[in-house]
Amino acid sequence: MIGTPRLLLVVNHAAGTAEDDAVEAAVRTLRAGADTEVVATGSAAELDAAVAARGGRRIVVLGGDGSVHAVARALDRAGALDPAEPVGIVARGTGNDLARTLGLPLEPDACAAAVLAGRPRPLDLLDDDAGGLVVNAVHAGVGARAGAQADRLKERLGVAAYPVGAALAGVSSPGWPLRVEVDGRVATHPGEGWAADGTREVLMLGVCTGRSIGGGTPLAPRAEPDDGLADVVVSIATGPVARAAFTAALTTGEHVDRPDVLVLRGRRVSVTGGPVDLDADGEVEEGVPARTWRVRRHGWSVLVPPR
Image (cartoon, rainbow, N blue to C red; front, side, top):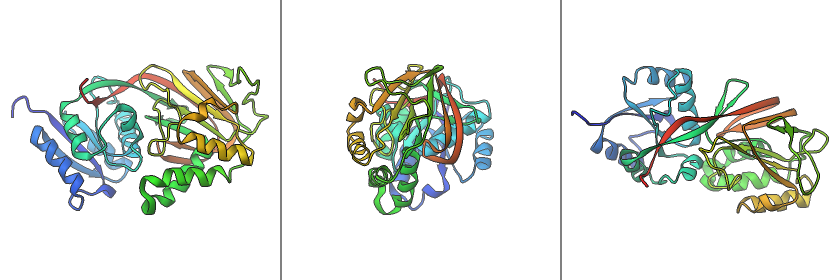
């Protein structure tokens, strides 16, 4: 099969293949146009082994943001996260927020077809000072609490778990005294005069290269995933009425126009004043005292539909 693309489709054990008609359709589509092997993994060690044994095959991830995050980390650990070697994504998660930002189809078979016909698009990453990375967005405060709420509701509610989780967290979170710095300067609202300087309670911090979280909620609606800058969203909507209004506005992206919300852009973002919970691409880390993220411009690439 000279000239035929060679792919390695990485599937999380939990996603299954045999019992899921949509996944089977995606696999058939890929195999119709490429020499495709399928590997199911369930741990970082298994992902590392799959990456090491890929034998020159292009990696395609079948899953959501968490699966893409895990595969990107495995490739990074192997020194193989290279924009010259694009990754394919077949959206099969609950939220699929990176796929939404990139305009990928959300039906697995259509997404598989887009992988076969796709062109590489270089994308930014966020590297953190704890050795992690972010492919879409990281949240501190109410965002992480909402993610934890959503995880408990996913099985019953599907994608609706995200707005419900956000609402539950939004009305119960008191805020955190966080200091946020963007490119070395304290995050300060130019019109309202308030600053996230550690003396004011912050409800939520988002550091984003992608535009949405939680299955399409536009946390950073103007973010561009390849411009070398992170969109930084800070909300101080900590009062009961303000929390509810912020949560409602967040679902449409109108929160960015609120006086208690600040949007900045930069290459380096630091937060101190925790402990606070973080949610990076759906992976929750509890009780983080401080964290710094740096943009790795065009640190990898993803296959996207042709123009």
